[in-house]
Length: 70
Image 1 (tube, rainbow, N blue to C red):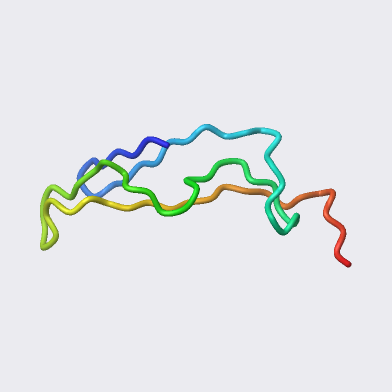
Image 2 (cartoon, rainbow, N blue to C red; image 1 turned 135 degrees about the horizontal axis):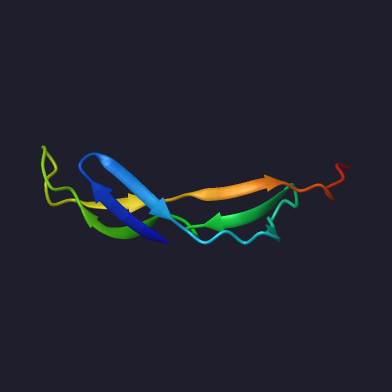
């Protein structure tokens, strides 16, 4: 995961796993994830919280077409 801050636009770049991996519940296929909240290495350049590092947590997923509800 790569994070950039340009003005007030935050950009997150991550590699997508086109096949995905099955989530713990089995309901979705995870294509990309930060694996929980992670320090981004990017700090705010201005404002009330200038110098504070931005923490990022994200998931990109699709519905698992093979999931069968009980």
